[in-house]
Image (cartoon, rainbow, N blue to C red):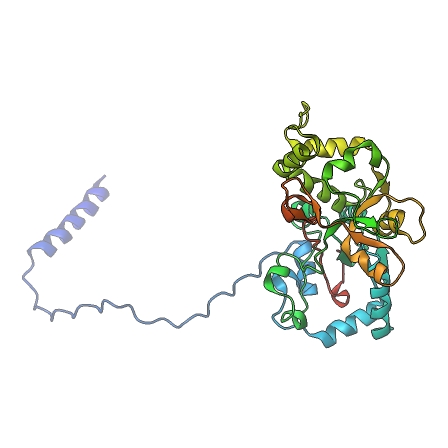
Length: 359
C-alpha cells in the first residue's frame, strides 16, 4: 500500500513541478508545414484485366468476325488458311450453287466446295439442329427465309455476318445490314406461252379458287419452302384489293367465313381448298406447267429468274401481266400493280475462304 502511495506521490510531484516551473526560454515558432504533401514516386497504373470471353466470343476473336473484325482483311492469310482446310460446305436454296461451286473451284483448285441445294425451310432446320447439337458442319449460308433468319438464327448467333472488304464499294449499306443480300427475288404467277399465245389465262385472282383451275396451280411445297408461305401472306395482305376483285367478278361483296377476317384470308382459304399442287422445288414447279410440248398445262407461282430458261429454249414460261385485278386498271397480277412476290430473299454471303467453324 505504501509503495502505491509513493508511486502516486511521485507522479503528482512530477505533474506539479511541470506546472509550477519557471517559463523556459521561448523557442522560435516553427514554420507551418507545407499544405501540399511531398510528391511520391509515380507508380504505373495497374493493367486493365482482359475481359473474360465466352467460347463463342473466343471463336469470333480467333476468326476475326463480328465485333472482332478488322478494318482491313488479310486476304493472303485468309487464302492460305482456307487452302489448308481444303473444303467448304455451302447450304443453299438455289440450283445456282452447283455452277457457283464449279467456278470457285476453277479459281481455287486446292479447295473443294460441297454445295447443297436445300429448300429454304430445310436449310433453316438443318442449321438450327446442327447448332443446337454443337455439330458445326456447314460453312456458308446462301438461302432465304426472312422470319427465321431475323427472328431466330441471327439473335442466337447461328449466322455470323461477313462482308468482304473488297466488295464494300459494290454492295450498298442497305444491302449488307444485318446480312449481305445476294439477290432480290421476285415471285410471279406464270403460265405456258405455247398453250396461251394471247397471254396469261388468269385475269382475276379469284379464278384460282374456281373449279376450272382445281389441281392446276403449281407451287413449291410451303412445308419445305419459306418463300411460298411468303407469297400467300403477301397476297392475303391485299384484302381491300381482293374484295374489289371479288365484286368485279361476282357482282357482290365477299361473304366472309368465321375464320376469315377479311377477303385476303378468304382468298387464301379458298385457294388451299382448290387443291394447288405442291412441288419439291422451284425447277419442278415451273416445269410442271411450262415444259415445251405440253398438251395441257396449268399455271404456277415461281421465281421470275426462271425466265432465263425460256430464253435458252428450255421452258415456255412467262409472267402473268396486263390483266385486271379488280380496280379496273391493268396490272401485272396482284392488286394495284404488285406482282406476287415474297420479301427480298436475303441470305448471308460469307466468303468461303473465311468460313472456319459454322454457319
